[in-house]
Figure (cartoon, rainbow, N blue to C red):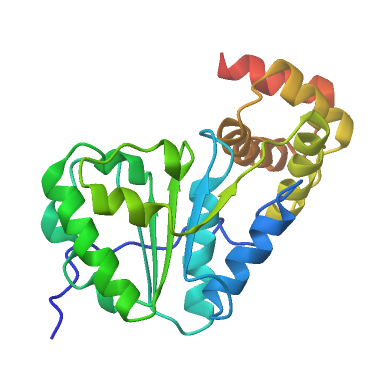
Length: 232
């Protein structure tokens, strides 16, 4: 009988597949959806620079797996407070496992071995694994040679960044998902004068929504300037 899982997590309610603006990443979205519904690849390795949506997609995969009545688990392996070899005990029985920042294990022999054992047992159960990292799997350097080999078994998918036009479309899309409107002109001003980093842009959307409701005003460029000045 598997041990009780040492860590629990809650789904991010705003990080589903429907909340993700794919841009040129439609194929990645399709592959993840197939995997978490039981018809796709057994192992997917998702990689790309920080802020491109990897964590969102891993949360979304777990959320969709739950909707499909599959057991699922997500954890960010860069959180050193939580990570120890015992973490992996029992996870071989979970149908969809998503680990963010697998590169955080590189060079830590005890964690590499624990993950290697989990990987083999989980795969033997024919369960699905989704990993993420900032670089391609063949660029990772693990001290355990067999783990180095297995990391390269998966379907490697590079998440593509959004260009400025995509970011404008993504902002209007995300705002609509949250229940308010932001015009392309306001979105364009925001990415030009505030921050081009997606995680920062998503964070400021909540503040803009609140400010618009509180003032009972539409989000015009003059009003946006006023809000951003108050934040400085």
